[in-house]
Image (cartoon, rainbow, N blue to C red; front, side):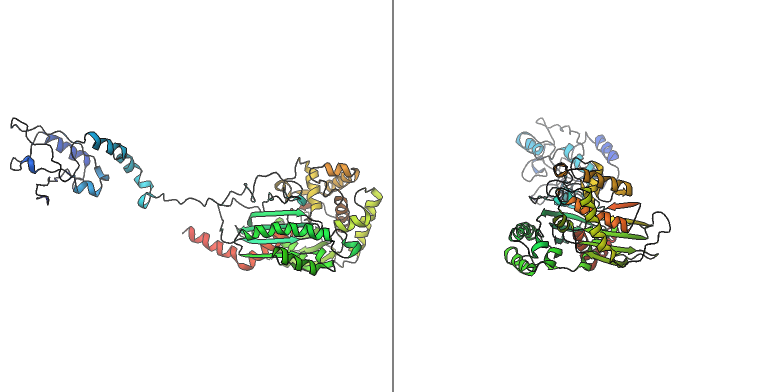
Length: 516
């Protein structure tokens, strides 16, 4: 076979990688022929190696005797490259060439390692399993969870007056990397009488989501509202400052859909609409004032995952700063996907922790003053026309409280050194335990309440007013147990938006396609 360069190309017999079927057998054959020489008809000057222009080893020594052919090991084996088949390498490499081969990793050992691991890699050496996106963090890190220390819910787990990010986990989420679609972000903002709260989340498992970012700050927008009927300039400034932080967070992310609401303070104030116009001008956020029925339904939607399948009746209450929403839920044999569809009766009391404490005083609360607050709320509940709840067996009925009042009671009950939402959300408190915690708080003075890490100075004058509203509800609907929910309107907004968009159905389809 003639070489195009003018020489005779070495012949490949059964020892070649392309023709042999057994590598060991081929090496034995080659070893037996180790003393043979090539035909003398081919002069040594015409023998070319795989590198054009470099003469191969001579077939004869200086005396004209046939040179002993050095035994060569096959280097390619089954993993030999195509280039190695067409252009055999020189029998020896010396000097710079040998060093270059070692430096480039083209040694026999490196080739054997490549052959060994070849089956574990895909095309062009890429790993077959793709790496998970670096921006997705596990559920226990950051906003889902950040591992930052938590403080009372009114300070929103580290957000507080300085607006630091919340330590927030919701709906029993799994780690984010398991079911996360980053392109679908939803945002919910709740501007209440006492707090300004924001959640940014992405859907995960059906009915659940992962919090990407969160913010909460006590603004006391309704401060002085009961006496004047107007939002004060100081209160509006505090709220707008918090809303600027929320606007910055929303601007830095690509939000698929958002809903921003205002509740009782803006509903009652004669300058509520004027204030919202100022919010648009100064922050760019357009808030809608929702009615009380919508507020009650959103509170129920936010707590739907805390109602077990065995439950038949629930009274869910949200004690806010300016109003308190109560929903009576009756669940039959056929449960709707949205728990709010099971609401049979609801009411909104025009009283909250801010308004009640301003009327009666929340700093120095005596047992007589506390009882007077309870009776006022009982009078409001007396006008609520709702049939009695029938309890067939134990476990059929219970209360669910979603407010800073009940989360504070739970934190005090657990004697937490710092408020931890993960330990509070979903906890059960017996009727006796609730009574004991209320009595304990009533026995403390203002400074003792302010020093408690689960209350703090910002809520020390409000917590007993909340306990009075809770006591009136417990007297109207006696229950052996109450479940604590550290969630509310924002969670309800997110749940409803995701359900309306059908993201959980789409994500379920994607998950099914991935497993095929």
